[in-house]
Amino acid sequence: MSLDFGWWMISFLVGGIGFVAFVYGKKQGRSPALVAGIALIVFPYFVSSVLWMTVIAAAILAALWAAVRAGW
Image (cartoon, rainbow, N blue to C red; front, side):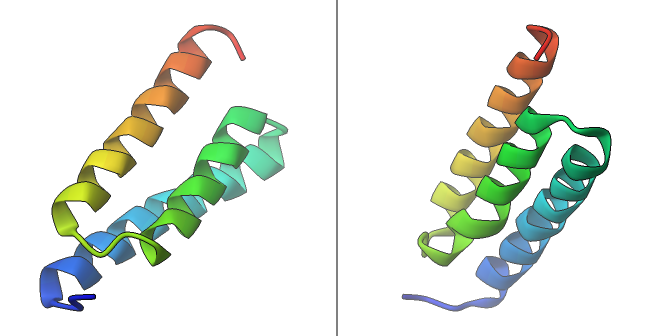
């Protein structure tokens, strides 16, 4: 596993967005935001590539956006 500067920065950014989504989902009772927040917080522990971390985070956020647009 490569723990370079880019990995740390993307990991902190994704984790920070995940934390905000988690807190928002918990306070508002919005399960899509809660689940997406947990996923964004946890998955960087298992991904060692900056590119894949960015792609997975974008996919999770796109799924959250689609769930909110669908009325969840």
